[in-house]
Length: 131
Image 1 (cartoon, rainbow, N blue to C red):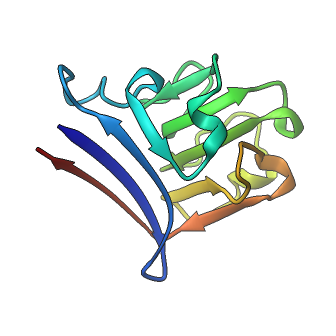
Image 2 (cartoon, rainbow, N blue to C red; image 1 turned 45 degrees about the horizontal axis):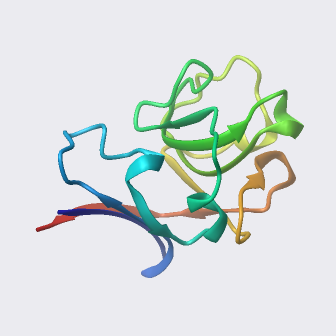
């Protein structure tokens, strides 16, 4: 079974991730261990993330489907993908000033420092399962 996450902007796919859904549940399929391929070639080779989770994490606030390598203040936040669905961040970064929900994706072939605006904002996100 495969689980695919796709982000679109104006009907054009701008980012994707394919996961193995075998022996998973409705949340733990979204894991680096299950990642098969994606828009970002380095995502499959990174050995550690500070957040890779549907629900975000301790530092995630209202961030979901959050894939991030490092935090450390706005200018040091580095990641690939996230959905922010409300402005609940106590330290507001430039990228937090959006209309919500906001679907962020790195425009680079790797993770991006969110603060430096090398990201795109998708208008649609799809998740589908294929047997």
